[in-house]
Length: 385
Image (cartoon, rainbow, N blue to C red; front, side):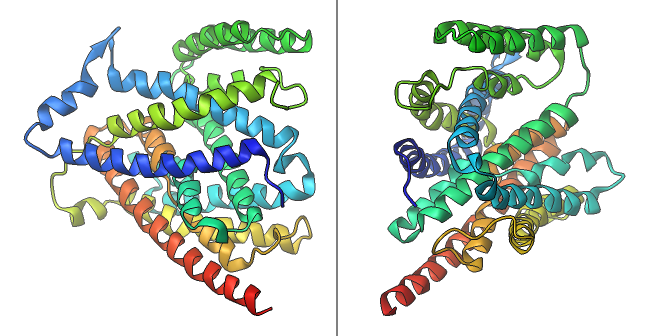
Protein backbone atom coordinates (compact mmCIF):
# COMPACT_ATOMS: atom_id res chain seq x y z
CA UNK A 1 0.00 0.00 0.00
CA UNK A 2 1.42 3.35 -1.07
CA UNK A 3 1.19 6.14 1.50
CA UNK A 4 0.52 9.75 0.54
CA UNK A 5 3.08 12.43 1.36
CA UNK A 6 0.69 14.12 3.82
CA UNK A 7 -0.05 10.83 5.60
CA UNK A 8 3.68 10.09 5.97
CA UNK A 9 4.17 13.57 7.43
CA UNK A 10 1.20 13.04 9.75
CA UNK A 11 2.42 9.62 10.89
CA UNK A 12 5.99 10.75 11.53
CA UNK A 13 4.85 13.86 13.45
CA UNK A 14 2.73 11.67 15.76
CA UNK A 15 5.86 9.74 16.79
CA UNK A 16 7.59 12.90 18.00
CA UNK A 17 4.39 14.18 19.59
CA UNK A 18 3.88 10.96 21.54
CA UNK A 19 7.38 11.17 22.99
CA UNK A 20 6.92 14.88 23.78
CA UNK A 21 3.58 14.25 25.52
CA UNK A 22 5.15 11.57 27.70
CA UNK A 23 7.88 14.04 28.69
CA UNK A 24 5.37 16.82 29.44
CA UNK A 25 3.26 14.48 31.56
CA UNK A 26 6.24 13.35 33.63
CA UNK A 27 7.43 16.94 34.11
CA UNK A 28 3.96 18.14 35.08
CA UNK A 29 3.48 15.32 37.61
CA UNK A 30 6.90 15.97 39.14
CA UNK A 31 6.31 19.73 39.43
CA UNK A 32 2.81 19.24 40.86
CA UNK A 33 4.26 17.04 43.61
CA UNK A 34 7.41 19.04 44.35
CA UNK A 35 8.21 21.89 46.72
CA UNK A 36 6.96 24.41 44.13
CA UNK A 37 3.60 22.63 43.72
CA UNK A 38 1.44 25.60 44.90
CA UNK A 39 3.15 27.99 42.48
CA UNK A 40 3.00 25.53 39.59
CA UNK A 41 -0.70 24.65 39.96
CA UNK A 42 -1.51 28.35 40.46
CA UNK A 43 -0.19 29.08 36.95
CA UNK A 44 -3.06 27.11 35.40
CA UNK A 45 -5.60 28.66 37.77
CA UNK A 46 -4.58 32.24 36.91
CA UNK A 47 -7.64 34.21 35.82
CA UNK A 48 -7.86 35.86 32.42
CA UNK A 49 -11.12 37.39 31.11
CA UNK A 50 -13.08 35.82 33.98
CA UNK A 51 -11.76 32.30 33.33
CA UNK A 52 -8.65 30.33 34.25
CA UNK A 53 -5.73 29.72 31.88
CA UNK A 54 -6.63 26.01 31.97
CA UNK A 55 -10.15 26.86 30.80
CA UNK A 56 -8.87 28.82 27.79
CA UNK A 57 -6.51 25.97 26.89
CA UNK A 58 -9.31 23.40 27.02
CA UNK A 59 -12.00 25.49 25.33
CA UNK A 60 -9.87 27.70 23.10
CA UNK A 61 -6.61 26.11 22.01
CA UNK A 62 -8.17 22.65 21.79
CA UNK A 63 -10.63 23.98 19.21
CA UNK A 64 -7.60 24.30 16.90
CA UNK A 65 -6.71 20.68 17.67
CA UNK A 66 -10.23 19.66 16.68
CA UNK A 67 -9.94 21.76 13.51
CA UNK A 68 -6.92 19.62 12.56
CA UNK A 69 -8.82 16.43 13.41
CA UNK A 70 -11.68 17.65 11.21
CA UNK A 71 -9.33 18.37 8.31
CA UNK A 72 -7.76 14.91 8.65
CA UNK A 73 -11.19 13.28 8.77
CA UNK A 74 -12.33 15.28 5.73
CA UNK A 75 -9.27 14.20 3.72
CA UNK A 76 -9.83 10.55 4.65
CA UNK A 77 -13.50 10.77 3.60
CA UNK A 78 -12.81 12.54 0.29
CA UNK A 79 -9.68 10.83 -1.03
CA UNK A 80 -8.26 8.64 1.74
CA UNK A 81 -8.96 5.28 3.34
CA UNK A 82 -12.58 6.19 4.12
CA UNK A 83 -13.41 7.28 0.57
CA UNK A 84 -14.06 3.68 -0.53
CA UNK A 85 -16.84 1.89 1.33
CA UNK A 86 -15.04 -1.46 1.23
CA UNK A 87 -11.92 0.02 2.85
CA UNK A 88 -13.86 2.09 5.36
CA UNK A 89 -16.05 -0.63 6.85
CA UNK A 90 -13.33 -2.35 8.93
CA UNK A 91 -12.13 0.79 10.76
CA UNK A 92 -15.74 2.03 11.12
CA UNK A 93 -16.86 -1.22 12.76
CA UNK A 94 -13.66 -1.31 14.81
CA UNK A 95 -14.27 2.22 16.06
CA UNK A 96 -17.92 1.46 16.88
CA UNK A 97 -16.89 -1.62 18.85
CA UNK A 98 -14.20 0.43 20.58
CA UNK A 99 -16.82 2.99 21.61
CA UNK A 100 -19.74 0.76 22.62
CA UNK A 101 -18.00 -1.96 24.64
CA UNK A 102 -15.89 0.35 26.87
CA UNK A 103 -18.95 2.53 27.50
CA UNK A 104 -21.00 -0.55 28.40
CA UNK A 105 -18.32 -1.79 30.79
CA UNK A 106 -18.07 1.61 32.49
CA UNK A 107 -21.85 1.88 32.76
CA UNK A 108 -22.04 -1.62 34.28
CA UNK A 109 -19.88 -0.48 37.21
CA UNK A 110 -21.43 2.98 37.57
CA UNK A 111 -25.08 2.69 36.57
CA UNK A 112 -27.34 4.78 38.77
CA UNK A 113 -24.45 6.63 40.45
CA UNK A 114 -23.52 10.32 40.07
CA UNK A 115 -20.40 9.20 38.17
CA UNK A 116 -22.41 7.45 35.44
CA UNK A 117 -21.79 10.54 33.30
CA UNK A 118 -18.18 9.38 32.87
CA UNK A 119 -19.17 6.61 30.44
CA UNK A 120 -17.63 8.61 27.59
CA UNK A 121 -14.15 8.56 29.18
CA UNK A 122 -13.00 5.07 28.09
CA UNK A 123 -14.48 5.52 24.59
CA UNK A 124 -11.66 7.80 23.45
CA UNK A 125 -8.35 7.08 21.73
CA UNK A 126 -5.37 9.43 21.81
CA UNK A 127 -4.32 9.46 18.17
CA UNK A 128 -0.89 10.99 18.86
CA UNK A 129 0.10 8.41 21.46
CA UNK A 130 -1.35 5.44 19.56
CA UNK A 131 0.36 6.30 16.27
CA UNK A 132 3.48 7.39 18.15
CA UNK A 133 3.94 3.97 19.74
CA UNK A 134 3.20 2.21 16.44
CA UNK A 135 5.83 4.33 14.70
CA UNK A 136 8.46 3.34 17.30
CA UNK A 137 8.19 -0.21 15.93
CA UNK A 138 9.72 1.11 12.72
CA UNK A 139 9.63 -0.29 9.20
CA UNK A 140 8.34 -3.68 10.36
CA UNK A 141 4.84 -2.19 10.60
CA UNK A 142 2.84 -2.87 7.41
CA UNK A 143 1.50 0.28 5.75
CA UNK A 144 -1.99 -1.19 5.91
CA UNK A 145 -1.79 -1.42 9.71
CA UNK A 146 -0.69 2.23 9.95
CA UNK A 147 -3.60 3.38 7.81
CA UNK A 148 -6.05 1.13 9.70
CA UNK A 149 -5.05 2.60 13.06
CA UNK A 150 -5.09 6.17 11.71
CA UNK A 151 -8.56 5.71 10.20
CA UNK A 152 -9.80 3.97 13.35
CA UNK A 153 -8.48 6.75 15.60
CA UNK A 154 -9.94 9.50 13.43
CA UNK A 155 -13.39 7.84 13.39
CA UNK A 156 -13.02 7.30 17.14
CA UNK A 157 -12.33 11.02 17.57
CA UNK A 158 -15.42 11.83 15.49
CA UNK A 159 -17.44 9.62 17.84
CA UNK A 160 -15.97 11.44 20.83
CA UNK A 161 -16.86 14.81 19.28
CA UNK A 162 -20.47 13.71 18.73
CA UNK A 163 -20.65 12.40 22.29
CA UNK A 164 -19.28 15.70 23.64
CA UNK A 165 -21.82 17.71 21.61
CA UNK A 166 -24.83 15.55 22.49
CA UNK A 167 -24.24 14.26 26.02
CA UNK A 168 -22.04 16.89 27.65
CA UNK A 169 -24.20 19.94 27.00
CA UNK A 170 -25.81 20.81 30.34
CA UNK A 171 -27.55 24.10 29.50
CA UNK A 172 -28.42 25.14 25.97
CA UNK A 173 -28.83 28.74 24.81
CA UNK A 174 -30.83 28.01 21.67
CA UNK A 175 -30.47 31.48 20.12
CA UNK A 176 -26.66 31.42 20.35
CA UNK A 177 -26.59 27.88 18.93
CA UNK A 178 -28.70 29.10 15.99
CA UNK A 179 -26.22 31.94 15.39
CA UNK A 180 -23.37 29.41 15.34
CA UNK A 181 -25.25 27.12 12.94
CA UNK A 182 -26.14 30.13 10.78
CA UNK A 183 -22.46 31.05 10.43
CA UNK A 184 -21.65 27.42 9.61
CA UNK A 185 -24.27 27.42 6.84
CA UNK A 186 -22.95 30.76 5.54
CA UNK A 187 -19.40 29.38 5.35
CA UNK A 188 -20.69 26.31 3.52
CA UNK A 189 -22.42 28.63 1.04
CA UNK A 190 -19.20 30.58 0.50
CA UNK A 191 -17.48 27.27 -0.21
CA UNK A 192 -20.12 26.41 -2.82
CA UNK A 193 -19.66 29.88 -4.34
CA UNK A 194 -15.95 29.01 -4.70
CA UNK A 195 -14.70 31.69 -2.32
CA UNK A 196 -11.06 30.71 -1.72
CA UNK A 197 -9.91 33.34 0.81
CA UNK A 198 -8.83 31.36 3.89
CA UNK A 199 -8.95 34.44 6.14
CA UNK A 200 -12.72 34.75 5.61
CA UNK A 201 -13.24 31.17 6.81
CA UNK A 202 -10.94 31.63 9.82
CA UNK A 203 -12.70 34.85 10.90
CA UNK A 204 -16.06 33.13 10.47
CA UNK A 205 -14.71 30.16 12.45
CA UNK A 206 -13.72 32.39 15.38
CA UNK A 207 -17.18 33.98 15.45
CA UNK A 208 -18.81 30.53 15.23
CA UNK A 209 -16.55 29.33 18.08
CA UNK A 210 -17.69 32.26 20.25
CA UNK A 211 -21.40 31.61 19.73
CA UNK A 212 -20.84 27.88 20.26
CA UNK A 213 -19.02 28.69 23.49
CA UNK A 214 -21.85 30.84 24.89
CA UNK A 215 -24.54 28.42 23.61
CA UNK A 216 -23.58 25.69 26.07
CA UNK A 217 -22.39 23.23 23.40
CA UNK A 218 -18.69 22.62 23.88
CA UNK A 219 -16.85 25.16 21.76
CA UNK A 220 -14.32 22.68 20.34
CA UNK A 221 -17.12 21.30 18.15
CA UNK A 222 -16.77 24.54 16.15
CA UNK A 223 -13.29 23.44 15.12
CA UNK A 224 -14.62 20.31 13.41
CA UNK A 225 -17.50 22.19 11.75
CA UNK A 226 -15.08 24.80 10.42
CA UNK A 227 -12.91 22.07 8.87
CA UNK A 228 -15.82 20.92 6.71
CA UNK A 229 -16.45 24.43 5.36
CA UNK A 230 -12.89 25.03 4.15
CA UNK A 231 -12.50 24.42 0.39
CA UNK A 232 -10.94 21.04 -0.37
CA UNK A 233 -10.70 21.21 -4.16
CA UNK A 234 -8.95 18.12 -5.48
CA UNK A 235 -6.95 17.78 -2.25
CA UNK A 236 -3.56 18.44 -3.84
CA UNK A 237 -0.75 20.50 -2.31
CA UNK A 238 -2.20 23.73 -3.69
CA UNK A 239 -5.62 23.31 -2.08
CA UNK A 240 -6.54 25.50 0.90
CA UNK A 241 -7.46 22.47 3.02
CA UNK A 242 -4.11 20.78 2.36
CA UNK A 243 -2.09 23.90 3.11
CA UNK A 244 -3.96 24.60 6.35
CA UNK A 245 -3.65 20.99 7.50
CA UNK A 246 0.08 21.03 6.68
CA UNK A 247 0.52 24.33 8.56
CA UNK A 248 -1.36 23.17 11.67
CA UNK A 249 0.55 19.91 12.21
CA UNK A 250 3.50 21.41 14.06
CA UNK A 251 1.70 24.06 16.16
CA UNK A 252 -0.88 21.49 17.29
CA UNK A 253 1.53 18.62 17.91
CA UNK A 254 4.37 20.60 19.43
CA UNK A 255 2.60 23.48 21.21
CA UNK A 256 -1.12 22.92 21.80
CA UNK A 257 -1.10 19.24 22.84
CA UNK A 258 1.99 19.59 25.08
CA UNK A 259 0.46 22.66 26.78
CA UNK A 260 -2.79 20.71 27.25
CA UNK A 261 -0.79 17.84 28.79
CA UNK A 262 1.06 20.18 31.15
CA UNK A 263 -2.12 21.93 32.28
CA UNK A 264 -4.23 18.82 32.74
CA UNK A 265 -1.73 16.44 34.32
CA UNK A 266 -0.74 18.81 37.15
CA UNK A 267 -2.14 16.17 39.50
CA UNK A 268 -1.25 16.38 43.18
CA UNK A 269 -0.87 12.77 44.29
CA UNK A 270 -2.49 12.28 47.66
CA UNK A 271 -4.15 9.36 49.36
CA UNK A 272 -3.69 5.66 48.86
CA UNK A 273 -3.45 4.47 45.23
CA UNK A 274 -5.33 1.29 46.12
CA UNK A 275 -8.16 3.38 47.52
CA UNK A 276 -8.26 5.56 44.38
CA UNK A 277 -8.40 2.49 42.13
CA UNK A 278 -11.19 0.93 44.21
CA UNK A 279 -13.80 3.53 43.23
CA UNK A 280 -16.38 2.30 40.73
CA UNK A 281 -15.54 5.09 38.28
CA UNK A 282 -11.86 4.12 38.49
CA UNK A 283 -12.66 0.46 37.84
CA UNK A 284 -14.88 1.52 34.93
CA UNK A 285 -12.14 3.64 33.35
CA UNK A 286 -9.41 1.04 33.87
CA UNK A 287 -11.37 -1.97 32.58
CA UNK A 288 -12.97 0.13 29.83
CA UNK A 289 -9.63 1.24 28.38
CA UNK A 290 -7.48 -1.83 29.05
CA UNK A 291 -10.08 -4.57 28.43
CA UNK A 292 -13.08 -3.00 26.68
CA UNK A 293 -11.20 -1.02 24.07
CA UNK A 294 -9.11 -3.88 22.59
CA UNK A 295 -12.03 -6.32 22.74
CA UNK A 296 -14.36 -3.79 21.11
CA UNK A 297 -11.92 -2.98 18.31
CA UNK A 298 -11.06 -6.65 17.73
CA UNK A 299 -14.65 -7.93 17.66
CA UNK A 300 -15.89 -4.94 15.67
CA UNK A 301 -13.28 -5.72 13.00
CA UNK A 302 -14.04 -9.45 13.18
CA UNK A 303 -17.78 -8.90 12.69
CA UNK A 304 -17.20 -6.66 9.65
CA UNK A 305 -14.79 -9.27 8.24
CA UNK A 306 -17.22 -12.17 8.78
CA UNK A 307 -20.08 -10.20 7.21
CA UNK A 308 -17.91 -9.77 4.12
CA UNK A 309 -17.87 -5.99 4.50
CA UNK A 310 -14.09 -5.75 4.25
CA UNK A 311 -10.84 -7.65 4.38
CA UNK A 312 -7.69 -7.31 6.46
CA UNK A 313 -4.99 -5.09 4.96
CA UNK A 314 -2.04 -6.81 3.28
CA UNK A 315 0.42 -8.46 5.74
CA UNK A 316 -1.92 -7.78 8.68
CA UNK A 317 -3.20 -10.63 10.87
CA UNK A 318 -5.59 -10.87 13.83
CA UNK A 319 -2.82 -10.60 16.41
CA UNK A 320 -1.87 -7.25 14.89
CA UNK A 321 -5.50 -6.12 15.11
CA UNK A 322 -5.63 -7.03 18.81
CA UNK A 323 -2.33 -5.20 19.41
CA UNK A 324 -3.70 -2.12 17.67
CA UNK A 325 -6.84 -2.50 19.79
CA UNK A 326 -4.69 -2.20 22.90
CA UNK A 327 -3.08 0.95 21.49
CA UNK A 328 -6.64 2.21 21.10
CA UNK A 329 -6.87 1.91 24.88
CA UNK A 330 -4.49 4.84 25.24
CA UNK A 331 -7.10 7.44 26.13
CA UNK A 332 -4.91 10.24 27.49
CA UNK A 333 -5.76 13.56 25.76
CA UNK A 334 -9.33 12.75 24.70
CA UNK A 335 -10.19 10.77 27.85
CA UNK A 336 -8.91 13.55 30.12
CA UNK A 337 -10.81 16.06 28.01
CA UNK A 338 -14.08 14.13 28.49
CA UNK A 339 -13.38 13.62 32.22
CA UNK A 340 -13.23 17.41 32.62
CA UNK A 341 -16.71 17.65 31.09
CA UNK A 342 -18.18 14.62 32.89
CA UNK A 343 -17.32 15.48 36.49
CA UNK A 344 -17.64 18.58 38.67
CA UNK A 345 -15.87 17.34 41.80
CA UNK A 346 -12.15 18.31 41.74
CA UNK A 347 -11.08 15.19 43.66
CA UNK A 348 -12.93 12.87 41.28
CA UNK A 349 -11.45 14.71 38.27
CA UNK A 350 -7.92 14.34 39.66
CA UNK A 351 -8.49 10.67 40.46
CA UNK A 352 -9.96 10.07 37.01
CA UNK A 353 -6.95 11.73 35.36
CA UNK A 354 -4.57 9.51 37.35
CA UNK A 355 -6.50 6.35 36.44
CA UNK A 356 -6.52 7.43 32.78
CA UNK A 357 -2.73 7.80 32.88
CA UNK A 358 -2.29 4.38 34.54
CA UNK A 359 -4.74 2.72 32.13
CA UNK A 360 -3.08 4.32 29.09
CA UNK A 361 0.35 3.18 30.30
CA UNK A 362 -0.86 -0.41 30.75
CA UNK A 363 -2.72 -0.51 27.41
CA UNK A 364 0.15 1.13 25.52
CA UNK A 365 2.79 -1.16 27.04
CA UNK A 366 0.78 -4.32 26.32
CA UNK A 367 -0.01 -3.13 22.79
CA UNK A 368 3.65 -2.40 22.08
CA UNK A 369 4.73 -5.80 23.47
CA UNK A 370 2.19 -7.79 21.44
CA UNK A 371 2.95 -5.91 18.23
CA UNK A 372 6.71 -6.13 18.82
CA UNK A 373 6.53 -9.91 19.20
CA UNK A 374 3.98 -10.54 16.44
CA UNK A 375 5.68 -8.27 13.91
CA UNK A 376 9.05 -9.90 14.69
CA UNK A 377 7.60 -13.38 14.14
CA UNK A 378 5.76 -12.17 11.06
CA UNK A 379 9.01 -10.80 9.61
CA UNK A 380 10.83 -14.10 10.28
CA UNK A 381 8.07 -16.03 8.50
CA UNK A 382 8.24 -13.65 5.53
CA UNK A 383 12.03 -14.13 5.27
CA UNK A 384 11.68 -17.95 5.38
CA UNK A 385 9.02 -17.84 2.70
